[in-house]
Length: 520
Image 1 (cartoon, helix red, strand yellow):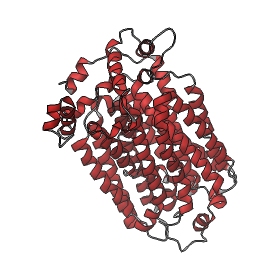
Image 2 (cartoon, one colour):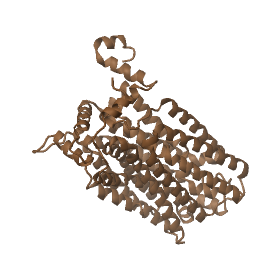
Image 3 (tube, helix red, strand yellow):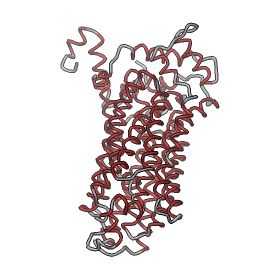
């Protein structure tokens, strides 16, 4: 039976990073800008006075002093305001489920095209919004677009990348998410300096640019060889195998691609007999657990506190509107820089080390921020500026920890652990769980801040302790393992091998099934 080391050493494909791969993956990864831009823009515009005055006058009244009786922690507590944020993620949940059959039947590129088109429509509607209902409808269209792109782009990157560089290339998606957040923060800060009442319209409609880049770029992208084989592409001159071989040779920059092609053929052959419900089979139980818990835990890191509402939090602790937006730019720069650091080291140190290091950093900063707010920010009155900068500095450390760990790895690990037969379905589960988690957190976070006060940061610190222990005990190391040989990591894991080996015994023979029928 093949081991992890054997999979790494005996299935070393002839592959190198070619300009073709770099350009293709860069265009595909730009889909992350859509997600990142929306993360950054929503938090920024909801801290702008003209935006709040037009769509959320009750919140604006609390911030302007008319609601002087309101607690510092409750000034932004509005279900309508949180609906503006969470509506995107509810739409993303449903669209990610629809994206799986599209990606499976039409290829990864088709889903990227659809995602870009829906996102562009949402950006136009949001920029032209005349009332809150038009505004939320635009958010729904943005969510549909993000559901398609988040489902297809990580798959595309993992399948295009050589095994030894898969971590770095897949992390490009999160790097572009970080660039999207940073771009949104810069746009928000810039339009705030214009001192016009319609600056928020520029912020929302500027999302057209990344949507156009992805949509136009995807028109010229090839699909992955894995997807080509899975869909049994053929024409009058060549077989599906020939089409995939030609494409793989172009991607890898060498004519010697037979070893990798044969692994892809075996995976495609197995996948052709499977249905969407195959992911529920016992042998896929470890991957399914990861597909559910990794995106769930990613939401429970508390990233929504930073991603959605960083400017709101900064205003809560007494910083001005302009400085709050500038602080969000600073955290965006740091986040993007540390995502890049993660790209450089993920294929050297492995996934598990980064998960643990990032988890410890984030846990510590939640405790520090919670402690400062607990002792220094009361219901009324501003926090001393020195402590406010302590909070800002701690949040910078937090986004650095997230940038090297759960941020990119939350996309990378789920996208590489599934076999081809359930890969598209598995990624839809990942995106759907992430969207549900983001919607729930987006809808409840400001209410939690109002009711739990500083305790909300200790709440997330507790979850970080749980997820770090989960990684140490149950997440296998996938560094360097070819994507179509990934099943070996489960067979060697101290816990998951029980399920995988027992399932193999169940399907191996009638006698094996009889002996192990209680597992099958």
